[in-house]
Amino acid sequence: MIGQIDSLPGVSIRSSTPDDAEGIWNCLAAVARERRYLSMVEPPPLEEVRHFSSSELVIQFVALAGALVVGWCDVARKPRHGFRHSAALGMGLLSAYRGRGIGSALLRSVVHEARSRGVSRIELEVYPSNKPAVALYQRFGFAYEGTKKAARVLDGKAEDITCMALLLPPLGGTLP
Image (cartoon, rainbow, N blue to C red):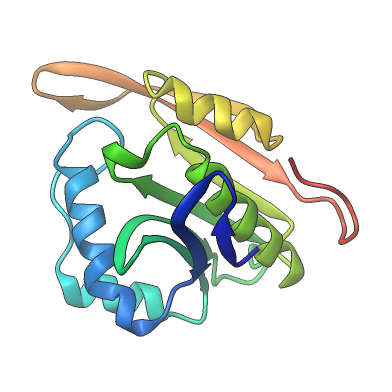
């Protein structure tokens, strides 16, 4: 799960470290400011990203082009009794690195690690207009669970949110 992406020399995937927080923040800021893919249009404060990334409940991987964080993918386990088997997925890639297999490599790494740590349900929310992301999640076996109608109104435009989830097979099952 960790290492070079064969089709992209110079791009690697690995577990995040505390030293990655600023790079993740910069990447998150760039994707948020696109105002299309994330629920936020500005990043949270850097210290919030540091705290999130270092939480025991978070499994996070980064994609690096040299020392530059070009993408991240994480799952945050739910802390409440009865829900600890499940986690919420978040991910993003800098625009220049999309459509090149990096998202698949990140997602594969996170799902594998989450399953190895006992997570059996990963859920997410995605805008239906983000067709490449929806297709990626479907390739990985995420199933449609519902729609939040007109959940976001941004720049005068209402947009639905699609809710999806992946029920993880026991270890030894295969991932795309």
